[in-house]
Amino acid sequence: MREAIGIVGGMGPAAGLDLFDKIVKATDARSDQEHLPVIMVSHPGDIPDRTEYLLDGVGSNPADAIYDILRLLEQAGATVAGIPCNTAHAPRILDDVLKRLDDEGASIRLINMINKTIQHLRGQAGEPARIGVLSTRAVRTLRIYADALEAAGFDVVQANDEVQDKLVSPVIFSREYGLKAFAPASEQARANVLEAVEHLADGGATAVILGCTELPLAVPESNHHGVWLVDPTQVLARSLIEETYPHKLAAPTS
Amino acid sequence: MREAIGIVGGMGPAAGLDLFDKIVKATDARSDQEHLPVIMVSHPGDIPDRTEYLLDGVGSNPADAIYDILRLLEQAGATVAGIPCNTAHAPRILDDVLKRLDDEGASIRLINMINKTIQHLRGQAGEPARIGVLSTRAVRTLRIYADALEAAGFDVVQANDEVQDKLVSPVIFSREYGLKAFAPASEQARANVLEAVEHLADGGATAVILGCTELPLAVPESNHHGVWLVDPTQVLARSLIEETYPHKLAAPTS
Image: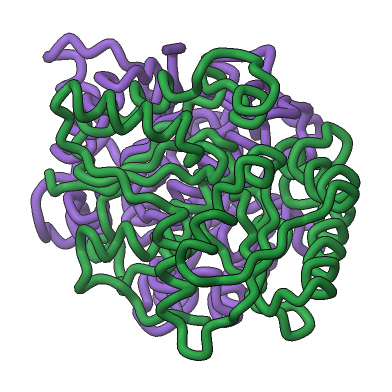
């Protein structure tokens, strides 16, 4: 069989599916046979919550399960892989995964969603100077996007405590209306994300990274009242195709 | 890792994703960790078109690639699997897959989408006496659903030649507007399916099986002008959960 694109799914399951769907839609194909080989392993029950591990010391390092899944993907024929979870890109998780892959002589190549998203921003004509970031508490507190953006020459505005705790964290995790609990996204989830985007726009952001893979499930559009909404899952989907079958990459739709 | 549900994807890629999505939505879960392990291997380029093989003798038996994918799924930890392609359930394909699994001592169990769909119809209160079937040319000509439905005591109405050739086959395969070429489904695709449903209703059908996994992508609703629309992908999703983690099966929504 041909070399496949691998997806480390389950963080959450809907985000994994969203990446897979975006790969299919970004492929230049008009029949089944023209589509690309993709393998997704979704083991949500084996991967501890990333935010709780990073900030609250709850559970073991999710790197263990992520590493195991990457090896399964490699055995099944994947040569590159993506992890559709921004929080899992925190160095305390990702560096551990990369070190184990290296120590064990794994051949699968991991595409870094956060680096690719920042490259994408830099590559855009008329690039925005001040970038907003919406994310889990962990990505905000550890400044996973913020530090990388500043290193790339951007100004950054993150959610303040109130926006994070009242709008963004619940939209991801709430068991009453959050995106990890309900699909399709609830009205409340969508309203929270848009209100949070407006807060960052008030802080001067002309683009906002929807930096948790659940967020674009509620707000799929690429623009809100003139603010550019950047979807890292979409960037990762296109990057995975570029790394494997670049001639199959469809023209961007937005 | 826990025992996983396997999906033989790629027939087409969107239908595989649809099954995965329906498994996630039919799972009683409010956090990532409460979701079920699922693995999908999508190798669309390796699986010849099922209808062309069965009716036109074009290409090799898709059973070869389906068997290989099932073994990959088994190696990656799947104990049961589904094939979200009705046409692949034709005996000339499926029996060959099952024989090879048996000959090679495979342990993965395949759940038959067609049998489960007919069981589902029989299990419904007020079950409809006359069932319509929309499908690929192959499923119609080989009477894959029709014979099984009649054996189960139902009357059957299939598409006539004109409905098949002008509405149903193009809605699946057309490179201008078909479901294998365009996602989300085009307006034309949706209009074709609904018109075909109305033809079968005129023929006395009170329920219509959307017997190609592409069709529910265009018409996700379960009722059209009083005709019950039966989605085999949805039935397969629930069956796969029942066979592995029955306590995690959410209450039906329709």
